[in-house]
Length: 121
Image (cartoon, rainbow, N blue to C red; front, side, top):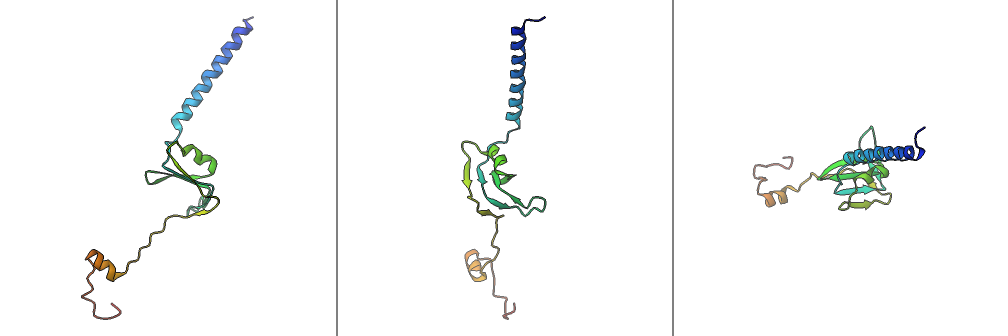
């Protein structure tokens, strides 16, 4: 029979090495911290496969994560700006594509209205 004390320490050492390997794998697979994390909200994704979420992580102007609050925490680092939405809705960005031709032309000197002769034009 082996020494029970030695066996106990061998098993403990093996467990520690195994756990250290798991932690190393987790560290390698952990995402780089995002610049912005929005959480605790009603996020409308416009994705039919996942129309609603709770949280979003954004890094370098790119959405890196869309999902639940628990999952987004992996994206938060010491420099991450974390915004609690307090249940408010987050929608995709809307860009207003209209312009007032006269002011746009004056501002950009690119809108020539001199060829127009009727109200319809």
